[in-house]
Image 1: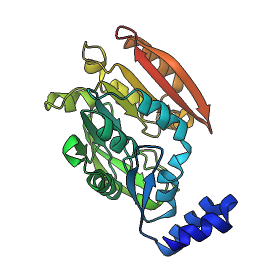
Image 2 (image 1 turned 120 degrees about the horizontal axis):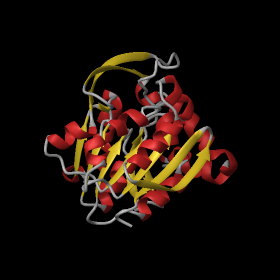
Image 3 (image 1 turned 135 degrees about the vertical axis):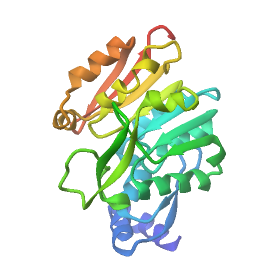
Image 4 (image 1 turned 45 degrees about the vertical axis):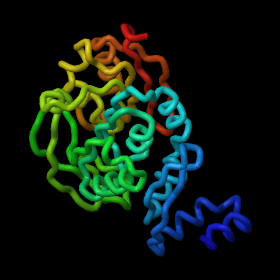
Length: 260
């Protein structure tokens, strides 16, 4: 793409911001290739998608650590899958991935990105949120062009829609394979999702490793806190091996002490 070459040569210090603004203003439809991650490809048509793909959502190191633990035999659950960076990476390296994304437009993009990489057959996708109980809930969202959707009453989002909420245990009861690795990024609903998987997490089939992004302020808005998340992980038999703080969020890695 000629515009990319010009930007790379002339505006290298500012190219990411310029490309992001171009994508935002002119709705440039392009394919982003993640050269550091197996040349996996992702659709991009907005500034937000450019940030989530080309800039890894400022989580490149997290992705590198996540990919390090993936094996050919793993079954990965990606809860809060967004447009599918972790899901596509998991489907490429692992046996199977089960992805959950409640926003309909983002869910559509998740499936498009799996298809773009020829990985749809290795994935099961749910347009649903996960929580402590089943039912219908309100989701506050701006779709592909805004911040991550949330079940918090967030005025920064343009819309709120009704979506289905499942629990980890209810999905297992459908016959879906249990995860060996679970990634959780749910904008403050971390405790509720873990609570809704109590049967799994207390069983011998529990995931061997959890990757969890904790949002302390959002947890409080939903009636919980970070200490409760840490305690329930301990109750489930997990040991925290990493806890990295970044921009008000905590990236946790927890392992089942009986499997390591």
